[in-house]
Image (tube, rainbow, N blue to C red; front, side, top):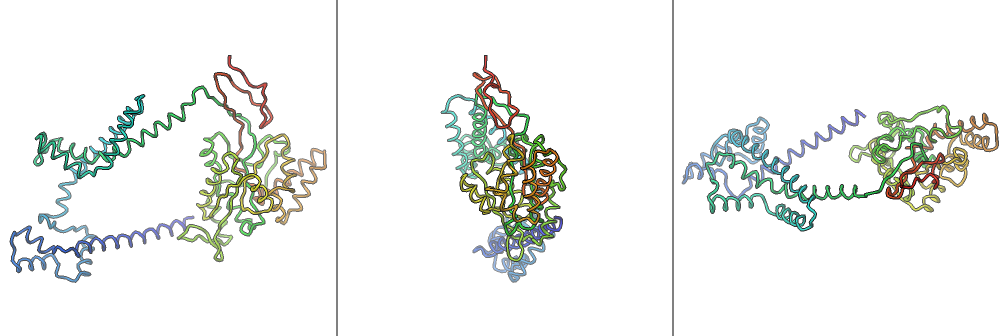
Length: 480
């Protein structure tokens, strides 16, 4: 990770150097290749009506008689030594002019920023609070005009009206606060006009989201099902256990649950939520978020990051995976995009493919995926039904069959399916779950929860059933 970061920083530094060289060369050439002779222009400005000898003397003095490449070299050398030379406009040292103008410029920018913030907040809030549409449209129209008018043109009109026609301000020699306020307003009009409609839209959007009067909801404290991913061992890239382990380490479950469910769901630490029968076992392996381990495993597997693309490669092949999901599953698309972003941090390219239920299921059973969604059912049939079906018409089957210890998994499933002895069932389920976990077949992400939404004018509340995903009509509490 540190080595990759050093390479990245070094590459960016080289790019910065070349960019600076290009920009300085372009700036220099634009100045030097102008049709106006700088020596003549400077001589006319300083002398008035110079002779040819005076112009030539100034040309030699300013170094304009040297070859263009030499002039550029001296110019860059002076820049590196913070020597900006003498202004051709007034003959003053450039640093002196900058030092004189900087405090005033800073003051004008500060006042312009204050003006923008005050204008944006006050006008947006007033327009939002007014119940009539006409003032809102008027504000938006004025903002369009403010964005469309260039600042320099606005300043010209401002001076012409207030200074020339009305004589309310002085064009020159004014050192009062008004001399700062006037240009600050002209500069700030663009920003104020640009951001005012944005704040108005944001306020209206938030208001609309919170405008469901009388609508309330509740979330069950208990877990329902597990949002789970299946990794296909039969695929060429994921046949390497180290790659599958790297994926498990690279997925930040806590970030996903906080970002997509506002923390209501909890990161999954096992395939089945706590409390599922026969699943309180000791796992041989645990996979917690660790980018360093993920990168180390991919390095060991021979996948090298291409610095130009950020994607790892091996023998000319990119580390690219196909992630499929059923589009009707809640949060399936959002989770796919989140995991795509997280895996990109370790150099894994992911293509997400949303599919209808039948396509997703048939393609999954056929093994046409690298990663796919396959949640647990969260019902009273777990873990038996989930594990039994993994050997049949299920995306697990083709992945499990590619394992060297597939027979161990199959025997374990058959053992608990044909026994009523609790100890045999417990041992067999533990074996099956450890085979899946050790080989990173399943990658559980979070524990989902039941939720209800109701009209509070008719419903006072709802008591969740102990059975997940089961709505009990008798648990509805009518409003009085």
